Length: 313
Image (tube, rainbow, N blue to C red; front, side):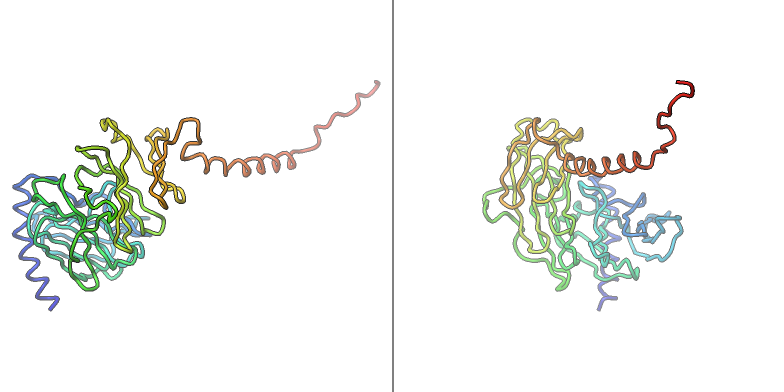
């Protein structure tokens, strides 16, 4: 059955790629380049000279030697998000690849690969316009952006969940249940992820109002939208997100703080210049270490330089 699906999927991929190139729309995947790194291995999809097929290469991040490979029909790439290349699960068991027409043509095509064994696990074909958004830590759920006005308009969308164990798109959208009237539109600017890979926080522009942070719980499949008080969004591309415990800091690239979001209550509070910047806790944690090293150097200093009486005095 899987062989039949793969053959059918390969035909769809061969049809979709020329349409994507002709359309000239934005790509949501990276082909070639640095690929994506997991542990000591870099996974890079390389399209052959004819442009008809892709080879997924497992390359040593240490010395650049090519190990196992996987040949795929069509042009495939690593998903690109506001945080850079993504698509590999936290446990390293699954890697999602998107067709180069990702989000631009229907059906939308994806490959789920086992990067450890370099083999195909699941081909996915969805009617409509979808691109990769996130993956749960255990690779049981895939989250996708569905463009509600077709592939030509990537500023209007909803988040959908795909059950990778049951191999089906779950009904409904993943939205903030406390704000049912919230309409997602705009473009992703930056994102950060919790250390365990469960929460994904993405900052979006909003042409109809304040920009917002989309907080996605990839385990439970729920989301929260948090508006950020920024009337003028011209400088939003200089904003960076940082997660420190339960505080999501929204600060400028220079390090100057802007606002903080409490991820337990979703309350937004101003981060005044007079307060510690987001990097201050880490800096202060180093102060005791610096004092300890200074004391050790002082104790280890030679004692021969102590003053001695001058003969004849």
